[in-house]
Image (tube, rainbow, N blue to C red; front, side, top):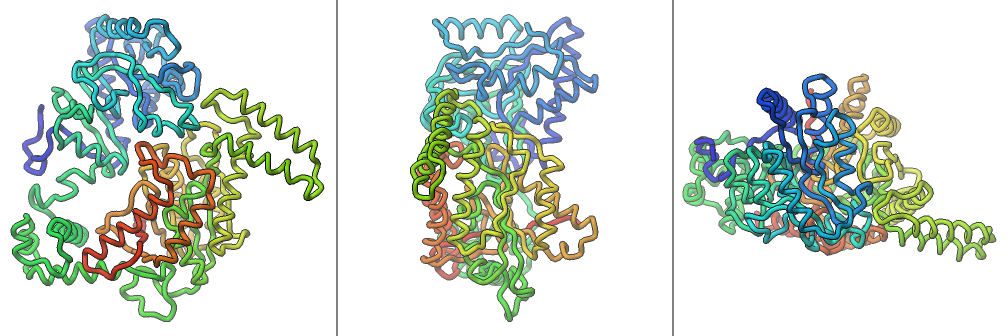
Length: 636
């Protein structure tokens, strides 16, 4: 391995490069492919790629298509092998990796059909023979030159180091993680065909990518952990030409990022000081005000005391006060109060507030207690649901609601025959629909109505008038399938109009970017773009409108980042739970790939309770639960 001698990387066993976003690393990969394809062509050979059907690779595939359209690259001299595929599965289904590559790459470039090797997902009599043949095809092509991936194909924990292309049984966690793609866990195939670990490691060069906070733990294990068959990607540490490309969000658990004082000199900003002090408290089991000079010195933090030129006790008091000032039971500002150390100004009061929720339940899951506070404290609260979330409703819920409609017709004198006809027609459509197939338009509308009704029920419970509940249905989401469109002009205009109409003093938006399907990310970008455009157009009121970011269901903010902590009483925890309960169609859905089987309210309560416990251990007052927020910093 060609690792940097940089002392800050001494915990790292694999080379990793950190980027702001996916743009630069994607260009590096594409430029490398162009150069290697040219060099191989001069030798009369083809460049052989192994590609992963992962959303984390889409930027690379889109940039490859651009390179082809700009005349920088031809695929006539490139041979492609796909890395895995569900089995058995019709190759034209939405979830098929063949269809993924067909839409993202093959149909848009000049690659000859004979250069495409997609793992067969159709039912076969002899899968072992087919897998052996796939390995032979790779050998006949001269072996893999470049692998582009975000994982080790579908090699499950326990896969042998020397494994080759083969059929495997997917474990339960993998199938639950894929449930949203297949519209139900029961629709996910039990098997897959995958390149083996040995096949991947035989490649001349590997580009491994990871984006978002949700990948941070995996990256730390891959880069700093031990090689183990329980984490197949750890075998990459042994590869002679490995390139790990990640964004800043995915890097946060690496030692040089998480605890840089352990790896060299630091610039001791206020944020890093808070982070280090909280880390020291956790390590020693002490509250902030009980840390001593020796505690700092014995745990690699003597430089902080030296640079500040003060005693540890002075640093402790500063950090303690900063943390204490984040706590506020008035998320909209406390009227007639000294706001000099409060996270939100007291005036104006009451405030106009928009809570942007990507899906119709993210608001209550992530900040339901704060929503209840804002409502009870008299603010003009607007709830804006950015997408319909209709693909997250199970078919059986559609039948259940239609059954209710037909059974209630007699009560209100509605047309029973028409209701019966609709009920039977939809049942017929659902029965005819293949597992995982996109819904017909009428079914999609019914699912949208179900989620709208649940959101309204939660808002009513929290005391928010129906006229302040907005369903934006941003067009990027309404494709009917799991694959969404990019953020477009129409999306931004819808968000922009709402903000302009309300002219809020505060905006709350889901600022976490770990959403595996990208919906949260796109929704957040829509809010930021709308805010910037409104300011550029000279709307002075927007300058006093602050955007507060809450974290979605994946994880909470680091306490060192938090700028407002809203404490919840036991009663408010119950209120939040009841608001989540209104979203009945979502109670059995997996929260995110690899999530535990508990229900939303349990996971939300655990997260909020653990945050309160952490504040308590740091020396703050003891609360039942807490929700954290960070203010978005716009560039001037």
